[in-house]
Image (cartoon, rainbow, N blue to C red; front, side):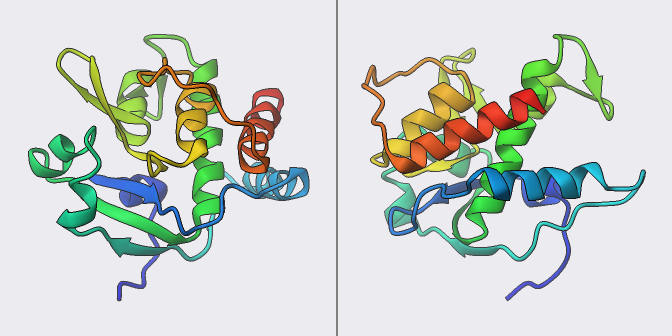
Length: 184
């Protein structure tokens, strides 16, 4: 078992994350978001935010082979597929905050020497076929209602499934987090 401090950048290095179906959905409410944001705002320049412990489980070929959109990135680009067993609330919140930052950035603008496209590729999705096929770096397993909601309402992507978004307590929480960070 690895036990070391890593930055978000290191955690997301050539890794693809899925929240397994047996995990509850996104349950953070306004008070949690405010605490998270307060921690980030109070960071001194050059300091890091410690998000807590993540428990990650390797995903075997029998499971990831069902991820039709992701097999290419796992097999050809050697991304490691991992289930988020513990820490998904914090990691999801960090991704929503990061997407909110991306939403505010102009094309060509850089953040810490990275373009909007670089950041999107590292944390949100990788694409192939001139951008037609996408593999989301972070998300839920496909049958989870939060999966399409995350892609469409948080990442602002078009649905390839043309499915109707389900309204659940978890999708409402995801939407509320996006609204919170968009207005912060």
